[in-house]
Image (cartoon, rainbow, N blue to C red; front, top):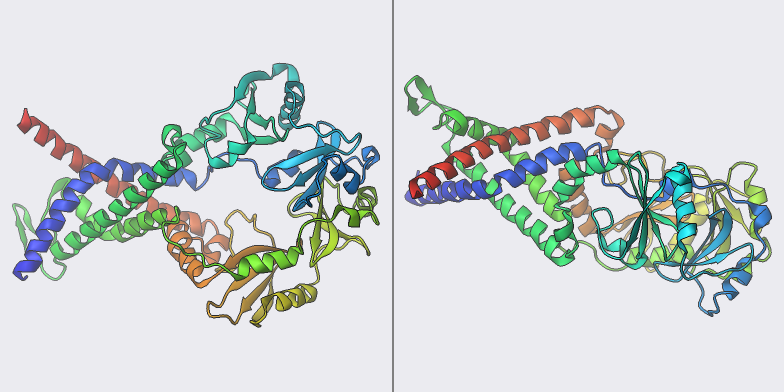
Length: 498
């Protein structure tokens, strides 16, 4: 080996050694919490939870048309989205002019700007299904706690928190009157051992968004460099062709004994996976600009056709739309929207069970793929549609381990410079996923390397579980050896200093 190579290896060993002392505990925490995160996610309230716990819409109590309800808000602005569902046992319109809805009750036109405690208590109790007399009011939260620390809750505060003896906790926004967070004793425990340490989601740090972002990015970035140094050292020291290192009990291909020997062997086996996992974890914070502007936003707007014109729903009021959809569904939410500028209702019982109720015509399960293609072809100009097909099962660029992404979808690829790709949900007529060339790189470098979200593994579970668990346990064992080595080194240094 040349003198520069020997010098480089010496400094690589030194850097890896002391960076390992600093980062070994963090790496061990990431691997162990990653195993937990495979099966226990961070608590949250999504569309599926909301629809599962919602009562069916009571058409008999709807007295106001969408236009009449909008007039109660005293605005000339058209909403981007309108939803009709039950709130506190009453049908209520939700008009979205931004992130937050403005509420108008459909029975008497009441438009509350803030919801009182007694309403929030009933909403929280209905969510859990537990006796109302056992609910305990935990206070009105105007600041972050562990379960409402992300920025999405900022505009929803104050949050009215209720708890029950079984460990259930529910947060109701006083602004919207809706449940915005719900946890159980089990979900909180899973998060404490999984998502929170894995994402460094500790409240004092996470509430400072920029600082949290920098800590995750820099610790992941430095950790990636540390693993690269370790790989270089291990590869240059390993002698597979001949056992050149002499030990009291024979010769070896690895110049170490004890924990260092185990660490080197595990590093050669799992070091590359460790490196790619840490690097792809850094990509979760989107430190690079993968997204390029353009086609996705334009096509999404064309599919919707602009803001909702409430007056155009007068020809078929919500009661009539509910009556038509009731033949197939127990409708819990009616969304007033549009497709290619034409008003339609989306009636939902669950994410999987829905119907499209046009103003003119009868309910259908999904939009006609030929019509969607025609709309997209016009919107894509001056580019053409290079490929169009209906996707009925998950594929490499459209996959979901939990099967929450909608199917079927229409796949469309343009002939633009980036070969832009789009997946359109045929049940709603909206973009479910889009890719530019940069996002395709992100898909493999982040999701592919970090989650191994490959359709074949997902379709043949527990193949995915076994494959990922083997790698995770190997990485965990590697980190345990580094913990032992790091502790011994620190103890020696502290002992010599004293």
